[in-house]
Length: 242
Length: 223
Image (cartoon, rainbow over the protein chains, first blue to last red):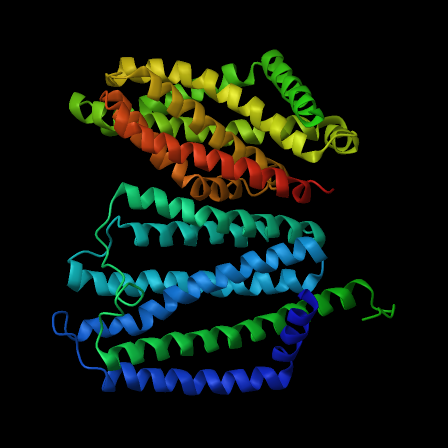
């Protein structure tokens, strides 16, 4: 299974795969912008500011998706010891930190007019903030060691432990307090949301996911180039087998 | 069974170093006391406020001490190639992790006794029901020591970047801090039944991190 996943990853990260993903991300984000700004009606209660949801929810989804990818590739790295899994974890963690910060910032912009405050110690907010801190820690671990194999192993352990910690953190803050808007899409009896709004939200999530894949391929290529540059700097005359 | 025996050997070794070096007593206790007095200046001198924030301050002191104690547990290994010796020893790496965690837990509990006394005297924290209070500190100290001992080996190699270790550990132990403070608060007020849920959370955290630690610690310690 790992071999199939590696082959699929190889195809997606080829230059043509990268171009296809880039174009699709561009189109998808355009469609999502039109749907969420023009087609979807303004919210009956919250008004225009509710449109922030169409970028906030996809950004939050990417945060969790990318850290899940970090978790899976960290396990894959520890099992196979292949550098590509480590590069994938690193790329995904960087994108994840970016989108976690974005989700929090967008949530604050929305929270000020709707809740009347930039920040509240609500469970989902607090969990996401802790998530951001854990993965900033993950990225700084990657800067400690100059031994690449050791760095990869340490990072993989933090990637695994950090992800396992998230549900426990969430449970503890849920018990602690709660005022966040309840789930609207995933719940019994179908989503409680107007049709075009739901469409705009789903397209937004899909568009962000494609963008994530595109950014991932870009970051993976940078990772490969970095590695090649180091290899060539270290052994300028020796031919290294691929 | 050998795992338990090896764990005990490592823990005994670490505790012997601590007892002879008086690090926990000589450094951690004054540190925690200074911290508590500083908290007193920061939030005092109103008695009511101090009594209300006492459980939180207590846990902050334990948390910071746990960071220092776990770093210390690996510092002694860097001298005279001790770490290489430990790695070459014919024992499971999990025993090193569990042994260190046991020793750090013991140090933290010794510290908690002193710090608890200070908080009761300085901040007039009531002690409603002592049993859940003790349970919260035992379970919480295990949780802090386990996470600290897992990543302490990383801290030792990051001596030029001191902030990384606490930056990594503090977010991870968020559940211990929240559950520990809540349980202490409820136990202080004598609400044993309400404290039980938080004690359960602490126990769950300990079980999860001991198991994960046993599985992944070997990967941290390969060289």
